[in-house]
Length: 255
Image 1: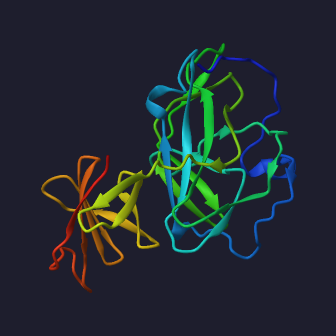
Image 2: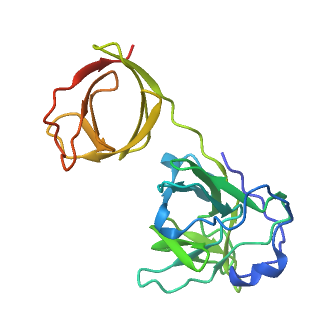
């Protein structure tokens, strides 16, 4: 449970924090391969309330590289919160002295996460609260955004605030090992609700969810992977232009 602690901290706007940025250490991440907004997926997960308690709330900010090339991302998120009309709200982050690398490298398919926490109850004298509709992260000169649900509160005469942790690698999804009826070994993991990473014959294929009448069907990179529950699946090759296989497939089973 996140316990409320009232401290006196200097406040700054998101744009004004640049001169008081967190202390960073050199990073081995290569220059010139900065992540682009088009190759990133940004999501906000309230964690089924696991951040909530004592008039506080929070969420996990997750950025995933959905592209085919590795890239680097600043280790500290730089979010902005807006209303439904995309107008910026006066919600700020106190400057942090925490140490972190200047950048973090994202391999294709991998993700990083940051914990965002705030005061969700109006516990202040003459306090006020805001309820943003969107949160956006700056990616160079671009942004990636996601819907936001939550109430952030602040003391009278001061903006509402939140805290962040630097990005860290997100926990990898556990892979299931399947044995197919033709003897082939397949490992599959599901990093999110729309993606399957299927490893077979020495290669890992990134498949995306597709329409199915039963179970979860994933297609991509000339393969179809169709699961029925978590332990039974059907693997089939896809010819050019196919979304349903014309070739016969093989049944695969996980213990």
